[in-house]
Image 1 (tube, helix red, strand yellow):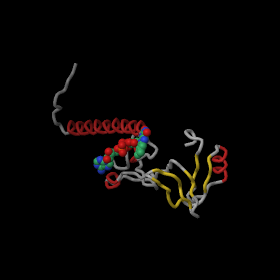
Image 2 (cartoon, rainbow, N blue to C red; image 1 turned 60 degrees about the horizontal axis):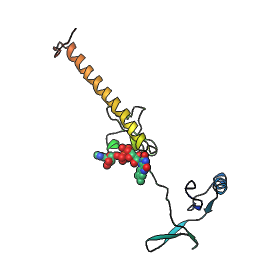
Image 3 (spheres, protein in one colour; image 1 turned 120 degrees about the vertical axis):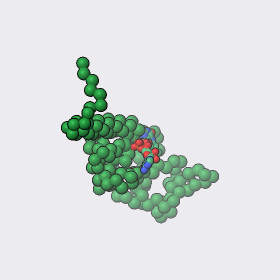
Image 4 (cartoon, rainbow, N blue to C red; image 1 turned 90 degrees about the vertical axis):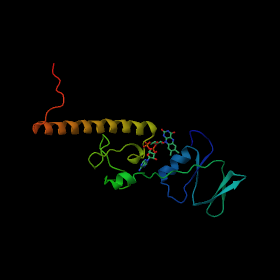
Length: 157
Ligand SMILES: Cc1cc2nc3c(=O)[nH]c(=O)nc-3n(C[C@H](O)[C@H](O)[C@H](O)COP(=O)(O)OP(=O)(O)OC[C@H]3O[C@@H](n4cnc5c(N)ncnc54)[C@H](O)[C@@H]3O)c2cc1C
């Protein structure tokens, strides 16, 4: 926010702020308002201020609220994919989950992924998935070959 505006205030909303964090904010001329946010002062559909515990109103024109990221991974979890302590599906560097043949990419596994990252992870997973399918085809073909089944068309030079 401070990259865009000179007049920025940080509401702790009751969460403790470490001394060094407070120092960083103040050094960057970001005002700090302690206490819980209990309401908004909105007039004519326009934000006018933020009401803090104790009744004080801090005049503001815009408010940004930090999002909470939650994985949308019900399907993967139902398939038995392991997740980390925060619920994000665990994958190796190709996108393979703990379930054989199941790959995942993007925000289901990585809350930090943005469009380009998610697309890159998707591409890597698609390549690994195709490799899996090719290897499966080869394994099946070798098994049939060993059983004496004829090879459909054997091209030779
Ligand atoms: C408000 C907001 C602003 C953002 N701004 C930017 C930005 O400026 N630049 C940027 O790079 N990124 C931005 N992002 C992040 C970006 O949108 C995501 O990182 C990206 O879309 C992740 O791609 P994804 O394929 O992992 O997930 P998604 O794009 O969420 O795609 C997952 C898809 O799977 C579908 N799905 C889920 N479960 C099932 C199921 N069981 N069966 C069938 N379909 C299912 C969902 O409906 C969805 O369509 C923003 C995100 C938000 C929320």
